[in-house]
Length: 129
Ligand SMILES: Nc1nc2c([nH]c(=O)n2[C@@H]2O[C@H](COP(=O)(O)OP(=O)(O)OP(=O)(O)O)[C@@H](O)[C@H]2O)c(=O)[nH]1
Image (cartoon, rainbow, N blue to C red; front, side, top):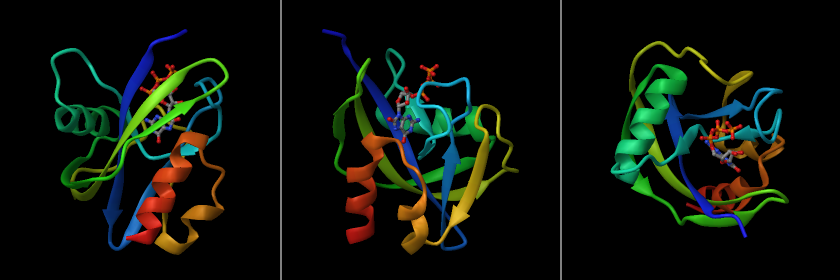
């Protein structure tokens, strides 16, 4: 049984819209949409992790607002614990370093994207807030 990978992700609000990013063709879960984030490194807190990942992947700074409920999900070949945060854009020009695409979407339209499966419960919770 593989170890569970701990991953943080951020629901980033910018001008009342939410930032979603699309995984590239060469990543795991190719072309699926997700909330940006990544794996927790040793000795790092969850909040440190999400801020670092957002800066590394997108070149922007964010302010963390709240933590939502973590989701454990088993994909066919790996298992993750996805730890979501709500956040607001603070500064920086958005530059996609790893992803294929990004969109700013009205909250009500988020559900129309083809999401990574582990994100669906997070999306559901966020939409109910
Ligand atoms: N960042 C992020 N990763 C997610 C989300 N949902 C989800 O299932 N994942 C999975 O969590 C794993 C770890 O995220 P990561 O973004 O650091 O992974 P990575 O680039 O190192 O992926 P790789 O294994 O293709 O190199 C990925 O395999 C990704 O598929 C999400 O909303 N955000």
